[in-house]
Image (cartoon, rainbow, N blue to C red; front, side, top):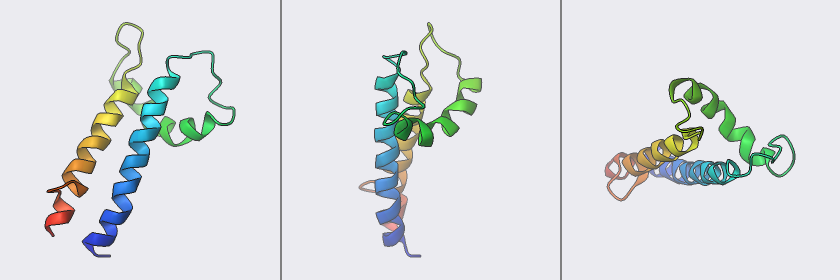
Length: 92
């Protein structure tokens, strides 16, 4: 697989994950929402496996779960480093 194909795959994947974590941040404002019900489970299903271990490392600050914000930062950084304007996969 060449770098261009990998860029076409990773770019949208990172973008989708960032969007899902942003939705997850908004959903934390409404604690009464059941994340096991449709359509909220479409956001919870791909994000929860990453959030569970992160919550063990990063405790809530003032009762607010900041782990979705941490993952938005991680995926944004990865996207910029790998497929951004001067990302590693663009240089190859």
